[in-house]
Image (cartoon, rainbow, N blue to C red; front, side, top):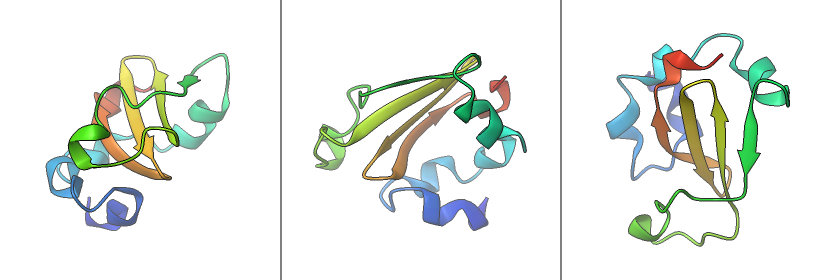
Length: 84
């Protein structure tokens, strides 16, 4: 978990450190495959709480997993082990 700290907004890393290890090793391949994942320009309503602009936020979904990033850093993840 600690090695992923640079991928997260510092304000949220502690919330996700314990589950980030569930992200499968093939996550990059899944994320780049338009048949297996979907990217939308959205912050899923999470950026405002962190004081972040929403214009550079996106949500990636793959299987039951969801990743929300703003400014190139993750601000939320759900079900990382369910990325398919």
